[in-house]
Image (cartoon, rainbow, N blue to C red; front, side, top):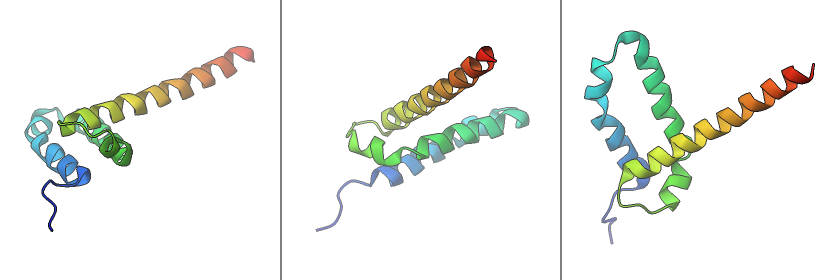
Length: 85
């Protein structure tokens, strides 16, 4: 039997493709930041697919929130270290 629904990675790629018109109207200097945002979502594709949501964007969005939370934690550690000096 064949697969009846696309894999999360395939669905995620399609979602990213659908955001291209948004990217095109961004100022050139901001496109790299948008591209980095979408790359960050791909880092957690396996976890997103395990969440089994009806919207592929939900999995991508929580992956982005998680990635940013991790980054904030790292920044907080650096700042705390600088304050201790």
